[in-house]
Amino acid sequence: MQSEQADERGMAFTAGLLSILNSLFDQPLAEEILTDLPLSKQIQKVQLKHQGPVGRALKCTLACGNSEWDKISAPGYNWEQILNTYLGSTQLAFQEQNSLLI
Image (cartoon, rainbow, N blue to C red):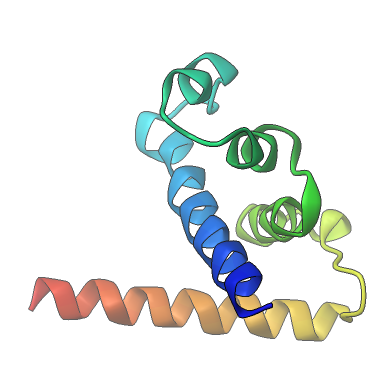
């Protein structure tokens, strides 16, 4: 059970890192790029098709980041919980980034 949770957290972390590539290159993350990288098929499905729990979380996160309010949903969570989690995570990410720059 703990191993599965650790795997899922690792996959979520990797999915989050990969999700910013389209912003860095100012173009959509193409299937050709992802399939050329040494990534598991599961990560590719998360990124390209938003499949599985991590894929659905990524889709929700991207919707928050793009202010696509009508696309924000996560089973078992209300809109306020999702938004508070997103904002809290974003704040932590900025704090980490700032600590690296100091």
